Image 1 (cartoon, rainbow, N blue to C red):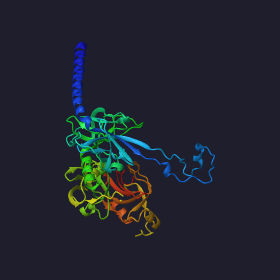
Image 2 (tube, one colour):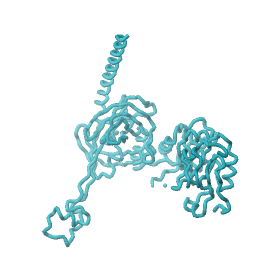
Image 3 (cartoon, one colour):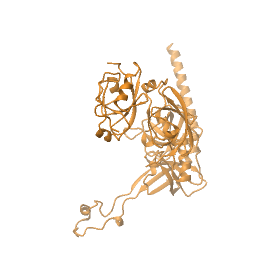
Image 4 (spheres, rainbow, N blue to C red):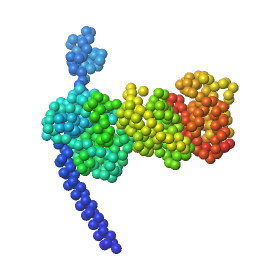
Length: 469
């Protein structure tokens, strides 16, 4: 039995080595064909020059050694000024007449950009345009008949698929690393909410930024952008901009000099299991609408607070982070179709997207607080005139004075928040609150739309402990 086990193990190892060797041979051809189009980028941000310095103070001693003169300089720069700041990254050629693509953050603030080709020729590049939201920049160099890389597509790209990266990590030019696709559709948050990043375990480090992520068929599927690391080095979490996002930015930068994005006009949040249960949705999918901007495309479509957007232009919205890239990829004034889930009912809405701007009655005093003798487990009170003013003069609502429900507290309900809606029913004041709470069915999840002290709104869903608990 042991001999048989060892024999099988040896065979498996031999097969793995053979397979790895075959993959290595494939990578050799792939790298040989790709490297000529990958470039190194050096940037310089000029410091101040002596001619740019303010005149020397008249009260400065004439015989004072130069090394001490900086202490008399009100700007603290001394006669030599500030030094130049240098940086760099990678890029690749997308047109044989000299168009180069890289990351926005590689060239941001640069006064001079030098592109070095694989054959060691150097060119001073012109910045055609760049976009911070997608982290894409387009450069032009005065050259022709250049080798290029072709854009592919990511629709068929699957986790587990082999990819390679070529770039200049730590200025080691034309370095090649390989790995697999770990996931697709990763979001980084507000800073780059319009990019559904490709996650890989390819070793990418400082200097790789702007270089290509290449499929085994030789097509570029991503532009390497950032890594997640606690110490600045690669730990197997690398993120690349999908080629479709990059192409859209490149086309618009060439056409308009900037990227124009569609704007729907909603604030959204994640759909939790409790949210889905409260809305009679079979699973937690989509983007939960917590606010509809006035005079927006969403308002024109009839989108309501509490709607869950589950499709956009025929594409499924699996989580809230999926929606911004979908909207941002569509040009302004384009007609789009939304499918929303509205408290147990599926609705199809249409509207025309606006353009994203990159720079965007007192409650009677005799209404007393409600004691937590209801399923919500909350002590609430009407808004005073001063509190209403501080909260931005909201339409209706009641203020949470205390949270006595453990489930509500664990879900994120806090004192000081304003309850605007319960299960898609608006709260005009204490009478509305009491009537809605009294009519809540027992044993069901509830969804509250709350406004926090910073003015932001969010849905919070939880399972109440029970009537009178």
